[in-house]
Image (cartoon, rainbow, N blue to C red; front, top):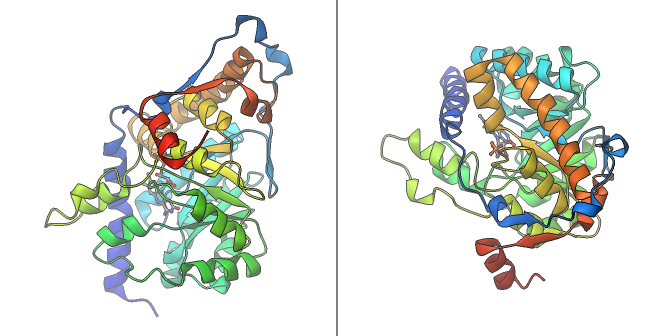
Length: 349
Ligand code: FNR
């Protein structure tokens, strides 16, 4: 049975997230990625025709090291957005994740708003997304409904704490993630939603059976700020910027034996993509920036942007003399400013 009050609250939250996240991406912002510099070696540049964007993790091989990260679904407005995102994914070949599908299990009418990701993108790599409280059976059902190739499980305590209707007990997440990994039948990616994570968290996830982790860090969409803006009382806006960046997450956690890292959170352009790959990411996700472009300039602009990014990622790899994504891990990188300081404090060479 569905509770009409809870369903209306779910729907309002989904639409609020889209509006407030898009507003956050109106202007490009400073990011830890600005402190990741490549050295220019003019004689080391390669041959563009030899560069491959293909990227390999234990759980998947993707033709490109870029994906549209989990965002939305569940309302009429977000169905329209998911349609456009699905078509953009199909046109460009980038993998795509849905927003949290928890609502499907309370509100079957929400199904089509997620299902478009598969219907409009039949050959694409699609990830369903769930929170860490869903049962393995519910997670499996989300995967079935989307005919998904993989599952994202988000772990987002900072967001939940600021959300009035959010979770307050996180103590069963780890055990439940292990059960989901065991029971869902597709590869599982565990991710933050923009507050980052430490090496210790990545190691713990590895011990729970997870092989792919998106360290989704701060510097892009900020859900503590979004949830504060949704509250009448000012919320906890002082928590804005909570956590670590993707740069810090990658430096802290790579390599953790047995885990492939994904990076997201504030990726602004192809150089950021290449920087994250050089720091050990297998692929790089974008959410808010692509959403903003879609809402302000439309689907064709998003398709053109993704095509351009993929071309330019290959161009920058050529400049750096990297033929494969894995080669990028061996190029010369300088870490400066606060990133250097983070490494010193965490004992990272
Ligand atoms: C998100 N994100 C997200 N993540 C998740 O795992 N489940 C979800 O339902 C959502 N919902 C959502 C809605 C909107 C509108 C946005 C913009 C983002 C988080 C997203 O996947 C990503 O981790 C962060 O947004 C950081 O990346 P960007 O936005 O800075 O590129």
